[in-house]
Length: 188
Length: 421
Image 1 (cartoon, chains in turn purple, orange):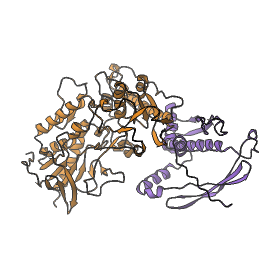
Image 2 (cartoon, chains in turn blue, yellow):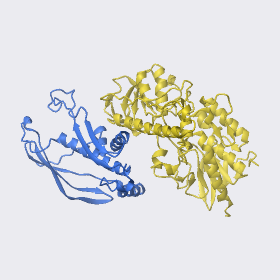
Image 3 (cartoon, chains in turn cyan, blue):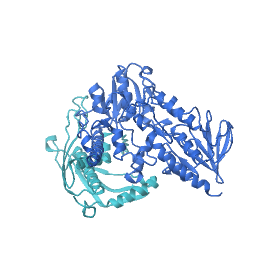
Image 4 (cartoon, one colour):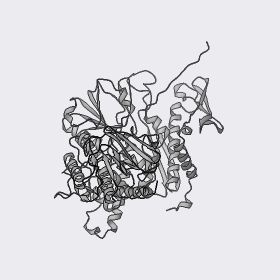
């Protein structure tokens, strides 16, 4: 077993706990807004960027702009210039859960050696193609398989993963309904 | 000297206790021991919530041997059974009588104000004044119901455990029980036994076996010191105070009330009820994880018990450790339900309770409407609270936990009163 001082998963838990305490006192500072913008390139190819967000009462920025290409594979008669949007959803879920595992492990003084997730999500594309209105567009489900090597018991590692799901934003977004409002400003 | 008030409907005393349930009467007992003059103001009768705001079949989650209050304990011949509501009412009534507590019944507190080091408690019978006030008005005055209730159509009846008495009140159609605490599962079980089809929407919950290694789980938690754990022993006291009640029922047959038992009986498990849109109820896809969290947490409790048992001088006399089957969850639990089409007629919201402090005109409430306190001592001098979950220790949530809490706050209160004004 690792002792307290040697556990290092690269997560500054003290800062996170401090922020949690501060935001308990100041719930208005906890109000964040996340943003992305997307530009159509050609065909099913689009490129999206993220840079600014709002939090702690003011405008914030990533250290730099990040961009993501999305497209569809060639079997959809596309040019495959990026991941499919549904794969990006899986990426979001996996990276959110994995970040949570690292943070919870640090807080519980568990040294992680390796954490690997593989995700698979079945989908009946008769939904998106409009062939059968009884088939939903989205995933039929999502399965996430974690392989974790850490200085902890099997139960403690399971508890890490369970706690990470409990505190995950993307897990919540994927498992629970969310109102989505789409507005259009057109120039004809 | 018990500080009796001779039936006055107003006056000045050292301390005003609000509520004549087990907690208020325990405080009254401890105040009388210290000869602190006080009155106990009660909106209805002694043990009013137990009398009028609980369902018919409710029994305590703690066995009779745990039913005790300062200077008083269960003395019957069935220490391992569980009190019914008439038993609890009798127990508390007897306690009030034994102590000759200065209870003013049918006295509803309308406001509590604090000015110039003095409290004014206005009631429908007259005003009382004091230097200190103990709020013992209960943790379960009002049902906590999620906003989704407002979205349900008129064709579906909704009910909370506050108004529920027995299955006979319900229509014969299918019932959705929202919540998997002791309350949710007890009522789901009873409604299912009445012949109605029951589905349970399961959010976070606390799983616990009634008996473990041949003994009641409360005996183990008591013996292993789990019930004595204090604020310093838990990571997050807010979370500990807001946990759902453990999935227990106090029945003669020591029934284990868990989700697997519900499934075996033929009930269906869905995820947490999240929304209601266009006639369709929507459930969370997190069912498997909330069950995993509860299974793992129960495992940790049983580990703690086993460690204690192994180190106990009686180790050889205990039955061997057991582990329980993990909660069985469908591979793909239902996420959406057309309630009307599927024949649902009732939704029972067993989603918890909250205290009612609308009369408390002192700025001690947090933004969630709970009294901010440090082990029962509120932020305003002379104001105390008792009878809340995990007030000071895990056992504070149970009747027997009240004794330590009542002694602690009355000692603090006596020191406070000894300070000259």
